[in-house]
Length: 291
Ligand SMILES: Nc1nc2c(ncn2[C@@H]2O[C@H](COP(=O)(O)OP(=O)(O)OP(=O)(O)O)[C@@H](O)[C@H]2O)c(=O)[nH]1
Ligand SMILES: [Mg+2]
Image 1 (cartoon, rainbow, N blue to C red):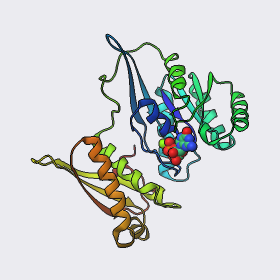
Image 2: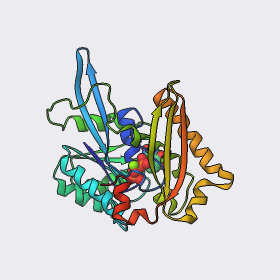
Image 3: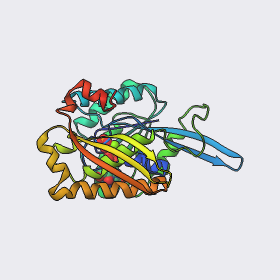
Image 4: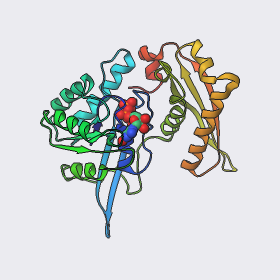
């Protein structure tokens, strides 16, 4: 099942809520998600698992201005071609706009059952939600569900609308698995998340994180070395912060979350490096793992 929509509508928040764990990082900055991130939901009965659903969170669909943007849209396109059911998320706090219509076009082309989620109803009002549902219903998709991914309201309805449209198939993942992301990627994303909310203007877009080294010491300490990549020299100082304050605060927050996640002490070593205009350069994008 693929979750698509324009940037910042709450796709990743919805995926996390459906899985019941943090699979994909979220932030108020558009284009937070930069890859197809899989989450797994397995529902069990008394005699073992009954069904499994694989959710794919995707980058926000937009008109690309950089090579990175084109690659992100390509990821969504690829995911739409592979999935059985589409969850199309729109934002109840903003009018249906060009980004939503662009998504509607792409989704229509995919020719799959589509469940439309009108998200953020906790921050909207009944009149507005009704208007959004009315406009969205003109697309003629299969189901429309008002939801708050933040509070969890309506999320179960999305799960049942989707699962009722999924075909029979094998269980692809073990029962206790909730994502298939490699550890290094999960770590890099958690580190990036801690910087996003604290950066402004173009900086969230200019930031990438790459894990360079991971090791578990004999005494159980998990050591991680990661590069925080920016595009220009002038950005380096901002990301480090006055007296290294930003680097310290974000690093500590990331380390604490990683310690909870892995259930062990973590030593996180962050280095800020400049890779000029990496968003625009195919070679740099390849090195950062964007296919
Ligand atoms: N009030 C409210 N805010 C929400 C809800 N769902 C998500 N948000 C907020 O909306 C912002 C964007 O959420 P994300 O889940 O990162 O959005 P996204 O669609 O994955 O964004 P991209 O990955 O950038 O495309 C965050 O600040 C979320 O906390 C909701 O149900 N209610
Ligand atoms: Mg996202």
